[in-house]
Amino acid sequence: MRPRTADEFLDLACLTHSENDAVERREQAEAILAASPGLAREDAYVAAVVGDVSALREHLDCDAGLVTRRGGPRDWDALLYVCNARIAPRASWDPLACARLLLDRGADPRTHALISQVPYTAIRGWRRGGRSGCGAATHAGAGARRASARCGRRSERRAGALQHALPARRRLD
Image 1 (cartoon, rainbow, N blue to C red):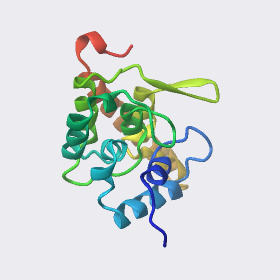
Image 2 (cartoon, one colour):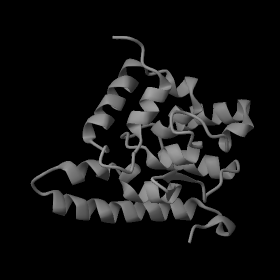
Image 3 (cartoon, rainbow, N blue to C red):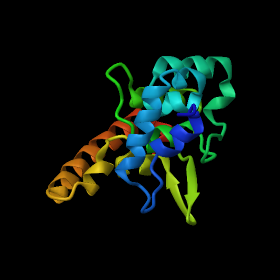
């Protein structure tokens, strides 16, 4: 198996906001991460996606411009990547803390990406299951409606947590 890149991981780990958001994409991203555990130390966007606060802080300390710089396979900033990620965080990783760190360092809470002419904001990615891991529930088959409802409530709580992380002057409407 050839070495996998951070860009491949990022592309597979994040929501596409299309019919291509299959669970298999997340599983492939998890496999890349398992085979290349040092990716978070090598790439700031990967550090944000997996919720590795220590690695992200090191990247930002070395290059403060990373907080708003767009890059990776989608040409997104780190806040968009962390909010649209579907990777289950490891016990020691904290995606919400990464989002807070990015916001504290100057990330734009209104950052967005145009997908099919529709602006997708960071908070929208967070709510759509990017951080709650609920995207998989919509593909679950039997019981998907119940799981989707549970995930909807969990997503709203997590979106509320992200909203709470924003300073009052930066709150999203």
